[in-house]
Length: 426
Image 1: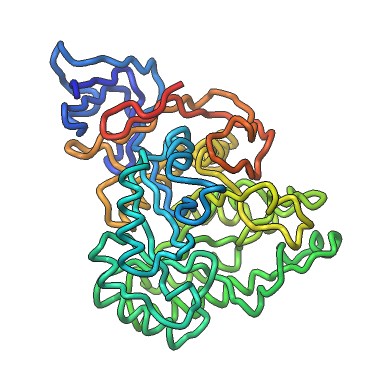
Image 2: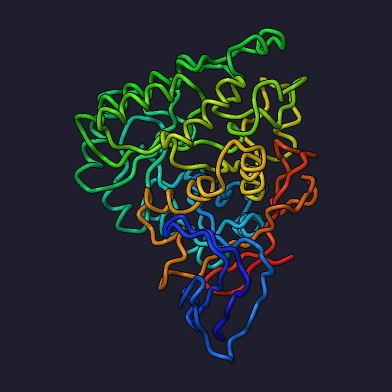
């Protein structure tokens, strides 16, 4: 590869507390050679004039479903990569709820080999915490970590058994693995499909109270004080959960928290008359909850924004609301939807980028989410002001179940570089 220089860029890199106009020099190996106002290069370097566009580290998405193996009709490595790159995402943590489930060494070897051959982004696979995600028996954390597993999650299921959860945390602490918990009490959430509220009553749907989320968080953080492992709450959705998080962080308990861009940007009223593409888990809650989540990011109670990318085929969504599958695609629109929070003055640009880049990288302990010299030149370049409208048929994902069809957004990815090579450009 020939040396490249990106000139006239507004470089924003929270890992270096950098926000300045300058250049990014990429060496022949796809690494950052120099960056900023004083960056240098040879005259023979390939020059790309960004004309004031913003350059940030490639985004790190901590929660996305890939579809392979078993659900290739919903998504596959190729289509996920295309959608990710179009959204400025260069590193993805893939969930283990495939078919077969990723809970053993042979499946880990398969998914890593398959991803290496077919994916065009950096993939960091998760394995399930328990065998078959059944919540009964731990998987072999040590063996799976040694084979390349980045963390452990039962995805949309919660470890209900408290004694088992204590053993999981104890073992995870001993061998330094990341546990990623879906916080929702099974019994309280059974058969529910929407937030428990006036909206649920009006639509005649069974709702789930935010107490189902809060009670698991309280339990796990109590256990964490005894078994201090690397613990991450995949997504929170309510003000009451934030109160618990604030109290425990004040008491010195160390853990991290994520939130879906959907819960930051939508509320239960957006469901309207049974819009099944907005059936999500955790569900969309009240406007008060949504605003509290934004405050949680401002106050460093929430560390990470995720896409919670869950592709579903049309047949599983075009059903009565209670029977429809949960989930929405979102990896391609995550950055643009996040920028909406900047344009309406809810969050600073630096805070948004931090939650999409260096924060998840630190939690995962990977050398991504930064433009420091010597790091991989994974770069997202976007136009902060570019207006566009979300059209499902134009999105790169194989499934088209977006929760924000026809939404007007401001801010669009123009180019994505992966290890110094242009992987996406418009």
